[in-house]
Length: 87
Image (cartoon, rainbow, N blue to C red; front, side, top):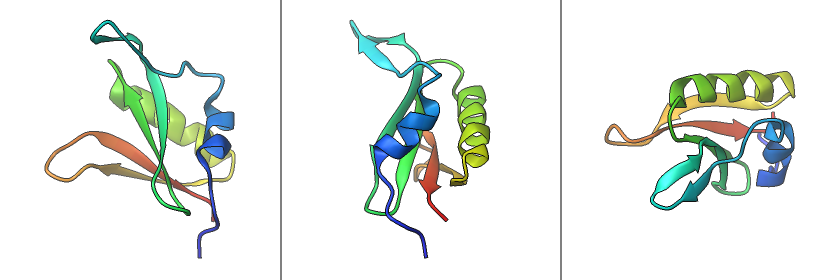
């Protein structure tokens, strides 16, 4: 059973990469964003250009840090994301 995880746990691993920032109706700074998805899951998104490469980079970093990572896409062909849990 997965253990409790918080966005700060994931953000600490990704802090070497730029965090996304929305500026004047555009991604002024493309990068990662973490969202709590319940007590045992955090989702990671890449905002801005380079979504596929960004998510792959984050996946590798998070797996190396010991997290369980599942690549997913929102229902209906929505945005790609990573589901992060603690094993």
